[in-house]
Picture (tube, rainbow, N blue to C red):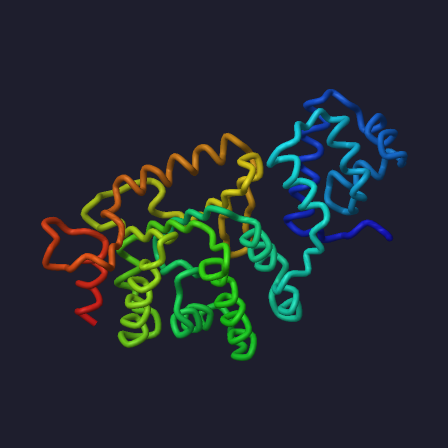
Length: 293
């Protein structure tokens, strides 16, 4: 099979990790090729994600690179042999590869932390809200509907048998931006409160009065894997979205999120009655905005 021209993020990430391990072990590509009894060019293709590596070959490479057994070792083995044909495959006729990469990444994520300065995060959106958002970027009604259904399907990671841990810090701007009109926004804010009842979901609102902070202007998502070495930061851009893997970059975004969480209002607690609050929290702010609609 010829090398693929457009590897998925999973395939690229596996290649990056294998190259990192090889370089750390001080082995050349020629030596690595001998380990799996292949040509030197095959190692280059594997490390760029353009070709797959057989299970026994991957096992030999990890051993030769001195990768210890554990969560990282097992995660790499699993990444290599996932087909990439999860539920998101049924949307390949409409949804681009970057969006499918996100769904695949979410299926392997154990902890997801997100900061959103302008809109309610996609993982928490109602159907009407998502449709209104996507209508601004997609003129074809049928494609917009398909994208909406795809976005809603991605939310299964919050409600499935083994849901991921989810933490969102949302700027107050998103509460006041009337996407789809007052009725749509009211239902969306109700949804925000309802989903916060899930024990694995934390929602915080960053209020206007908290002042300026550099991260306010940028949305980002931190995907935490079962092996910390495979954590990822996702940055969405209109022309080309980015997946960051560098450890220093990951640390910086983790610190930014921690700072945002410290400055934001206490998390939404739907079980707490508004009148019992001695000081404002995220729930009271969401309710205040909702009542003005």
